[in-house]
Length: 146
Ligand SMILES: [Cu+2]
Image: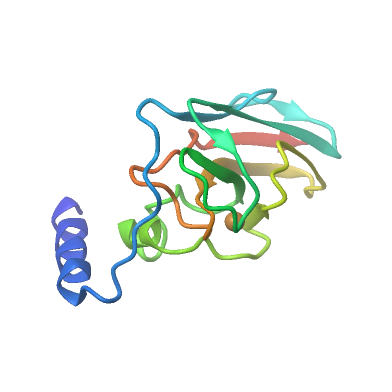
């Protein structure tokens, strides 16, 4: 598995023009769920508070050093381990039900999720929705909606 990822990265670098990388993150920056923990059982709608330390929040499109906006990944593999592997860390985060952008600079969200288990992960993205370099990502947590 590690070999495959390494080979993928080498091929990205070789292409050059297709290589993109997010804005630099601040050392030690952290994004986290401020009011939810792995294994929590909740009742919908779910209010989620986005915690961030070591960096600031700015709206999408605002290229300001040391800032980004929040992305909530729902029911998908951990960022960097999806279909495209580590390559996905180099491109804009898609927009769909599994990838929700808070480009207005929001620091919380209210979510309606179907009853059952769901995975959540926070990923900070730069002004162009690309994960920072190195990426600032929370742990993946699993919550159960009653
Ligand atoms: Cu975004």
